[in-house]
Picture 1: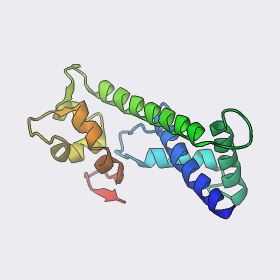
Picture 2: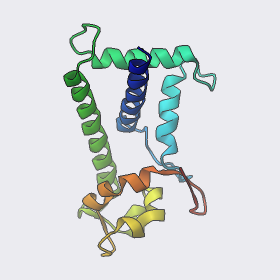
Picture 3: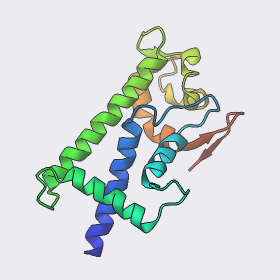
Picture 4: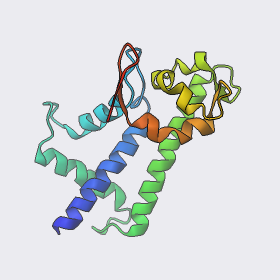
Length: 167
């Protein structure tokens, strides 16, 4: 029983993070230049039901109970592999749509690539433009951007001078 709770707790957090990322505005990068912190903050706030700055065991369990209920499509009190796959696939689809929307919003001239000026709309891209532009043509394509997600998501905070506090 303990093993299954741990599995669902980890799965719930992963799905919650994907959902938080997919929610409009949850991953918005403000002018101060913070990156992934917004996603983490949105997730924490959703778990911290009484907004006291800490997640109690009861809040954690309530959060996981809600996730379980969302995954249990036929409401039989069990989550099958198929139900879990549907939820994970939907969260991934929503997350991908969110990333595509962010890219499209930054691509001011709608040419399918971000030049250095357009990349300024995404502070993390300002810092990692060279690494993300893998073919070194001076533009980051949607494919390069999506392929760089592991690099960009390990960034916790981009400070005012472009220094990052990577995880």
